[in-house]
Image (cartoon, rainbow, N blue to C red; front, side, top):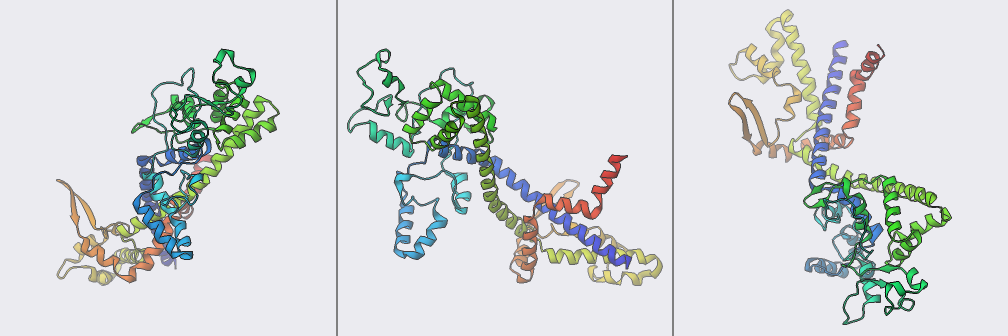
Length: 442
């Protein structure tokens, strides 16, 4: 009975160790891809661009996208359902509203965010300037097109700065002779003659920035620092109300939340700063949940790749663990029962091979090591260095065998639980947690 319990304990520990190791491998691959492509930083600045500068305008549509759109239109109801997974690759139905920079579908997670247009501002190796350029609509946004349509006449040259209401401001007056109404009128620059709100925010943060391929690497902004940066930008523009007037002129999505916070603060700057901090903190929590939801799809794909690469059949591995324990029990019984105790090992031995040599060979490769012997590439350490072997035939035979696929599915589901889950299970089964707690008390 005790021996049977020992077998099942070995089985549990072996399975947990295998799933923990594979989960760590998936986590490592995911983290490497995220860092290599700057996914976290792109995700944050895609949100900031959408929130501070507005939606991205869609002016150019590829011929492939047009062809797919025409095919979907001919399919009518089925085409509308098929359009949903392709939202990130097709032009929006209402192009006047533009498109979000954040991915809206699973396909966008794998295509748009990693390989699409980079939303991050360029890296600047200088501290924040003493005086910032005027606020302008970001090039390529819906706001930039709307401001250009309302302020620039056909055939006229772009103006360096325009007002929200041309009937109020008189361009014939110089700045020192402007009426009080003209001084209060929000001044915004044409796209290309100033900086967008996201770029002004980056100016406040670039002292802690690092460069990666010429782009910012900022992937996290503390809510308190965002609130202070917003207050600094507002101070350069004469206060909160002038800044909100400029944001309203540019049709920035930031205008509404700022107005709500400012109305609630009752002209109290400290209350406004705390309100902006709380609002941004809530936005970051929502963004984190969205990021984790998208990352699950990436982790699922990596888990599938790892499972198939090692052709890890959890059911076969469990059987091998039990067989391995039986082999070791047979070796233990050899001293009392003689060579007859080694009969279960005969099928593992080559014809004419010495019994003791066979025992050594079989037990020198435990079940835990065998799970990595089914990959299409294997490596062995020799005195001269690592030796690589390529054997795709056996690997493909395992993949094409339907009998292994239930085990592959079980392995995939187990890996999706994640390394923290299996590490906690290992500590519970081995009693590592209780031992560490008792040693800490002593």
